[in-house]
Each structure stands twice: as structure tokens, then as C-alpha cells.
Image 1 (spheres, one colour):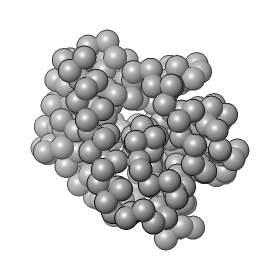
Image 2: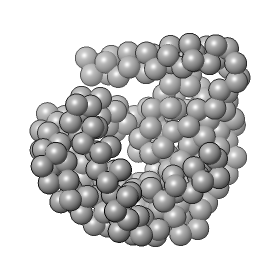
Image 3: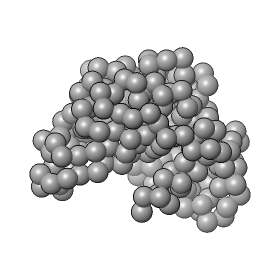
Length: 216
């Protein structure tokens, strides 16, 4: 119960900060991967109503379909749902790898890369940038990362009908971190969401790259 309350307080704090930032004006909220799951949890808590939501490779509730075993991170998600304590221990070990041997962690992360993510895995600039992100999220930000994953693996389908703003989804058709039918199921569960824009040959990070290129 304490973990659920902690996650709820986190989402409420995010909503308060976004309301202050928007000042009742129009707001475009963008979420990628697990960040998309967080954005979907935050939107119903916002006082700002003049908004639209852009989701890239969105992590949707696992209970929407038969997705889990087809996700590249399925073992981590299963562990987070089964034993949060062991999941946090694993995350601490990954944080050590990110700090001491970032190359090994990157190799493990991209070992099953598909589509245009394979080219990104060979790009030194991208790898250096992502290594910094991993060092931050698995190091000083590890508690927040664990909270996000543990909130994600719970059943939060009841939130989706409350997301009444326009939603747009961009999804790589070669993504094995968020499989395309997960994005399709999410679109079907939201009150105001167009069919996902499928990006040919894009996987997870390459879908984000493509979105940012078209939406600077």
C-alpha cells in the first residue's frame, strides 16, 4: 500500500508542477516509453484542460493484452511485479554497471535491438548520451526509476477512460520493447485517440529520434 501511495503522490506532484508551468494555457505533454505511462497517469490529475498528449512507443497497461512475454524487458517487469525487493537489488547492480562498465550494460541493452535501433547501437554519440542517462536514472535517480517501473507493472487500466484529451501515438513497427499491438490496444482504450502513426523500420529509440526530427 505504501508503494502505491508513494506513486500516487509522485503523480500528483507532477500534475501540480505542470499546472504551474502551463498557467491555464495550452499544453502539449510528450511521453516516451515508461514516460508515456507516467504521462497517462498524470493527465487526469491536471487542472489544465487545454492540452494534448503525444506518446512515443508508449508503455501501456500490461493487462490490456498478451504482451508481456514479447517485450524485451519482460524479465525485469516480471521481477518487479513478483518481488520489488529483488527488483531493486537488480537495479542497484545495474547502476553499478552503468557507473563502472557502461559498455557492458549498453551491450546487454541492445543485444536484441531491431530495426533502426541497430544503427543507433553503433553510433558513438548516441551511446555516450544514453550512457549518461542510464548513469543518472540507475544511480542518483534509482529510487524514482524503481517507483516508475513498480507503478507500471500494476493494473492501471482504470485510468485510461479518464484521459479525455486528444492523444497521438507514434510507434515503430519493428519495436520489441513496446510491441506495435500494445500501442494499438492503448489507442483503442483511450476516449480520444487516433490510430497510431506506424513508423516503418523504426524500433524503440529510433522511433523517438524520428518523432523529434519531425516535432522539434
